[in-house]
Image 1 (cartoon, helix red, strand yellow):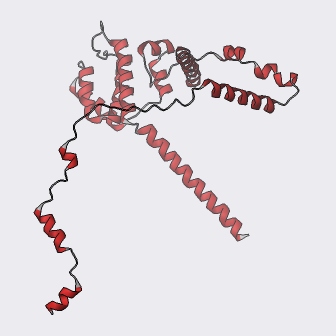
Image 2: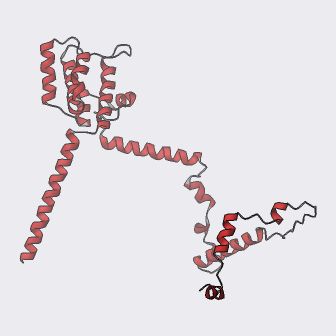
Image 3: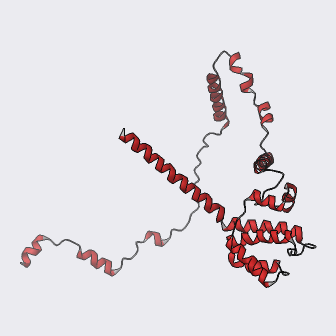
Length: 266
């Protein structure tokens, strides 16, 4: 009984730990996005603000009104979250009409509340439609008229169509055409021969192997090529090479000395 209670308690503690780690991971992902995602988001914000406030395709400046201040606050919060060192420089360029006191207060508020907005919430704040999102090629911001699930389903259909187009370009036939050409399983010719399906395909494979063996070329006859032309023999190949004197002395030193010579010397 105690063992079962200890097991339940240990499982409960493990689930609490995993849940805490999961919540921390989601919190870090929400507050501290990767540098690549932050750059993409700032780029998308600049696309939207350029389209809203840009003049003749030139760089934009936020207007001196409530909408301009709200959009500038959104941009400031993203810079304070991902690139705080560039916050004052970028906002000074986007808000040239703001006096120094208000500007310093504006920057302080952004530093106090850095935020990386969720995609759908940011779309609601900017009133970004799906058509405008597609025209501006925005990727990290949602839309107010098409949900994330709908965009994902639409992207899946488009990817499938692109994949099919690549297969057609590579010469792969559609499944309907392939099935129209391969009707063996549909016709079931083994039933007419009163044999099983496995026997039919085994015989078919054996017949195909036999056709392949007869169609292949056999071993060719071996031909011996004899060259009767007379060529002078090189002296370097007939005469042995002269051995160095050092090698000859070394060879002599390795010759065994007869035992009789040793007895006479003693």
